Amino acid sequence: MTVTWQNLADGLALGSIYALMAVGIGLVFGVLRLVNFAYGQLVMAGAFALALASQWGWPVWAGILLCFAVVLVLSLLMDVLVFRPLRGHSPAVMLVATFAVAFLLQSIALLWFGSLGKIAASLSYLQRPVDISGVQVRKFAIVAVVVAVICLVLLYLLLERTEIGLHMRAASMDFSTSRMLGVRANRVIGVAVLISGLLAAVVAVMLTVQTPLVTPDFALTDTIVVLAGVVVGGLNRPIPATLGGFSIGFATGVLGGALPTNQSQYLPTFIFAAVIIVLLIRPQGIFDWSKTVERV
Amino acid sequence: MRVIRSVDELIVPVGLVAATALLGLAVSQSTQAYFEDTLVKVAIVVALYVFVGNSGVLSFGHISFVALGVWTAGVLSVPVAEKAAIMPNLAHFLAHRTVGNVGSLALAAAVGGAAALVVGVPLMRLSGLAAGIATFAVLAITHNLLQYEEAIGPGLNTFSSVPETTGLRQAGLGAVLCVVVAFAYSRSRFGRLLRATREDAAAARAVGTSVYGQRLVAFAISGAIAGFAGGLYIHLLPLNTDTVYLDLTFITLAMLVVGGASSLFGAVVGALSVSALDSWLSVAENGTSLFGWHINLPAGTAVIVVGALMAIVLILKPSGLTGGREAHLFRRRV
Image 1 (tube, rainbow over the protein chains, first blue to last red):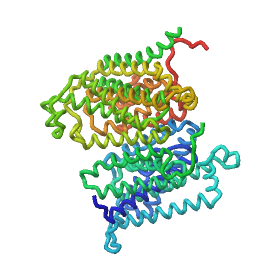
Image 2 (image 1 turned 120 degrees about the vertical axis):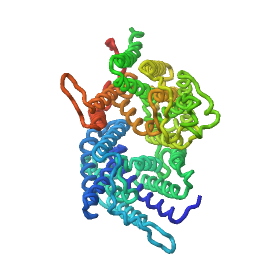
Image 3 (image 1 turned 180 degrees about the horizontal axis):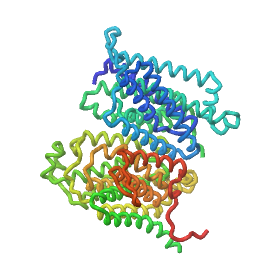
Image 4 (image 1 turned 30 degrees about the vertical axis):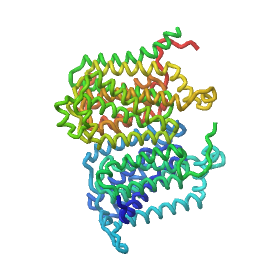
């Protein structure tokens, strides 16, 4: 196995996308204690919007706008129709309910667009390589890292420097106490869902550059891998969750490119075996250094 | 009274399964396939119940034991003469050996149980989300290995030429056997101790119950039932790695939760009702009549309606259709 600079760049790109998905999942988990398995289907819906826009010959910006609109409307609908009635149920019920939603959205996409999928090719020029001091790197890798850094910095500022950010952090620490102190539950949850939807739309745009063929199971595998990464990193806090998502994406990207074919077919085995080992050693997450003790 | 009360918790689920099998005898040959499929789903959901229902820990890994059962029973049942054509890279010790129908089912159960035991030894230390993700990782690894290890099966190809011995009789008897084993387990000392850890892990530990040990026992037993169900499944129809992966995991977990995860009755009711609805809608997609009305649904309606209904049941009645209680023919005296 030889790791080239290109492999590292691909790893960084995938890591950046997965980091954004991880934050999207982690934000909603923070305020709702709900693991949204249907997150990948939000990305899938956005990707289909992009594919349709490029099929209709819309300009790129209009396609991206449509993608954001579709994903945001769908996330708010999900919040009102599913998350709100489920609030306070056991985590298992909430998780299985989001399974059902994921299953539902996927079958709607299957019925609507068929299993062969559509091509979203309007941003494919980003796949072209650029030359950075002798190393051929896809433009997309640079764009992905820059977009992810901008999104994460904006999110950090929002969480640390604004009142709603303070409310969100308080709510994810202790929801009922923060409500007693005047944090409005619906507003905090609504904002979290909205930001998580925005991130899903960004991810949809970037993933369609990575994989232009959009099928009903688009982003499904990615969601599973990100969920594993988020739990490995530490789901309770945004920064460990992001780092977890980034690491698993980086590892997948680098290994996927660097391993020879007869080994790279076993990539999921390597990744998930690592996930199991890490979870056995540090079930609370490798990047969560806070001292949490199981209370009786 | 006490004896009757515990016996009806067995009679009702067994009766439901038997009634389904008998009902299957009354319908046409093509509709019978839905009944057989439903009975195999009952077996899988009951396997899930033994662990998930009694321990309260979610497992996404059980379909990997089903898949191992499928592979074990399948590889050992394909006639030797056809093995070279379907599985050219099969390991030597598997290539020249076949076992009978019952033998293959027993071995499927043994492999499922052994795999669950091996996986469970490290994994049962985990709980909550970490346990969920770790069992999911087991599923992903099993899927990946079965796809590419052609020494132990057909790899990416579909398992064909397995004798189709799972008719209504085998599916029905198999499902009943699973229900009986699950009942016997949950009535045993082990089952009761595990449910105690589900209700209050700290209190159970305080009276000397090993949460880890009890979960491991249940995991191994449910792995064995899942492997057995996998054996039934491959004798029913040709399968490939994707048929025993994510979709089956979601639908069986949803069946368990929709029925009511914390009771055997709930597992059986969930599997039967979701399967019944799904089968009926699939039939209706090809045109059917109900109470004199002719119904012809557009293709793909079944999955959408089932998905929507599952979500609605979970939102409105999170403890499931049965409320997670066992069935009682006689009124319980308070």
